[in-house]
Image (cartoon, rainbow over all chains, first blue to last red; front, side, top):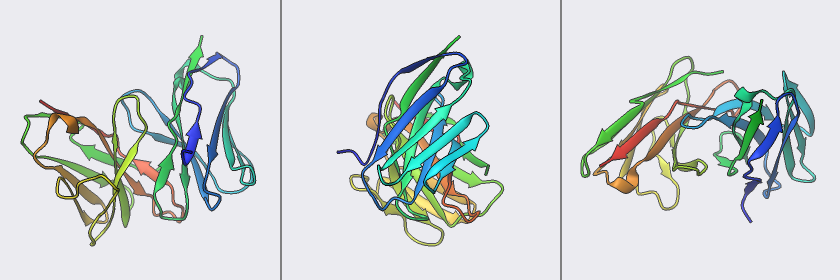
Amino acid sequence: QKEVEQNSGPLSVPEGAIASLNCTYSDRGSQSFFWYRQYSGKSPELIMSIYSNGDKEDGRFTAQLNKASQYVSLLIRDSQPSDSATYLCAVNKAAGNKLTFGGGTRVLVKP
Amino acid sequence: GAVVSQHPSWVICKSGTSVKIECRSLDFQATTMFWYRQFPKQSLMLMATSNEGSKATYEQGVEKDKFLINHASLTLSTLTVTSAHPEDSSFYICSFIAGDGTDTQYFGPGTRLTVL
């Protein structure tokens, strides 16, 4: 079992719809959770971090964390073609420790 | 978010030569930073973790004598790929922990290395 798992996609979403991305992790002691967006040929850019159970909203993005189920998700509302990218879920076991990345989910937003 | 620069953004070199990649944090100081490698259509693979003033900790399977890391200061780290070979061609990305009280990592723009 991989430490952090994501569906590779591609997840095809019509423009204006909600894109829902899922991520599961194996280490129950994980403390910090991150979503990064990576465009082709570019480095990852941080979308959001989440540390506590529940929802966290930032603009069109909402992260959801459920530590009991070892599950973290990302919702993208009003999807735009510019949201087409690979979304990486990353998990940190302890502060200052190294991130473990999932394989990423490729999202395609079609006009 | 924090700003991280990398130089060069791309480099092409001959097999057997060495290449140095610089990574700088521009608006914060960081005691811990990371070097990653990413092959096409794959996720990021952590190569090593370095702390300012001490030796880097390498991940399993990463040759420390081939990938030399120098964390010279709180704002500068370098990765030298020694005696590069075509299989070292990859996208190399550094990241810093922000130093804002969180453990958020901010990534540099990456360096694409092509070894002929």
